[in-house]
Image (cartoon, rainbow, N blue to C red; front, side, top):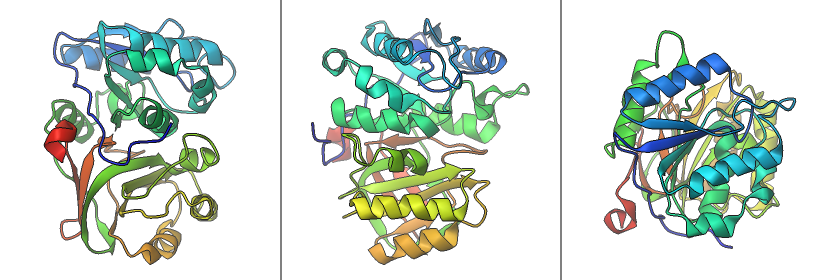
Length: 308
């Protein structure tokens, strides 16, 4: 299947009273964090159901590949569930992609998928296989939502506004290449995008704004992964670049500027998207706009007809 070249449909956001599911397609969530994250979702008026295998453990995974895939598919195909939240990232989502019944998932009503980091693999697959936009943002069992003292305030404010369909602009602090552009948003975690090269879910940047972020990666590894994307042609025709957080990545900007500035398209950086705090949400697949004058990214949650 081919990923749609334009902005793609935006599933309805969950509303108070709706049922949402929490699944663990990647690493095993901490039990205390998961419980606190569930209470945060319930505090928004949502009814929360937990995937049957969320608390399973298999080394660095939240249970077997088949069980993690089954939880995700069951939640997506359940007509009572209006959104699917991934509990956390870590590693393992790529291992589920070949185990999902995409025909069954296409037959289900689309809904919001929420997650970041390793969940980048699911965002790419959902864009290609299901043609639906999905949320790259904070997860229930991660620190910005589930710290003992409560959610990080700016993260939570942005998170609730985004889900309510009124996302504010996400502002950075560095302009690498000035300019303005409006295009669908794609991308996510750099490590996962590099790992997806050569798969059916490889990044296709043509005509799109590309979000990139990562954590705990030295500049030479960022160089290696970006070079892989460049040589694979994954970044050909990009309309612009939005660079999120680079927590514990040393000094990443020299290599990012070296490799991305030659595209001659707008590049802004320092946006609080990805890891660290605050952690803002972005709707991948929706229409976005870079304004380098304000060093900001805005995006539409109104669906294709409204966006275009």
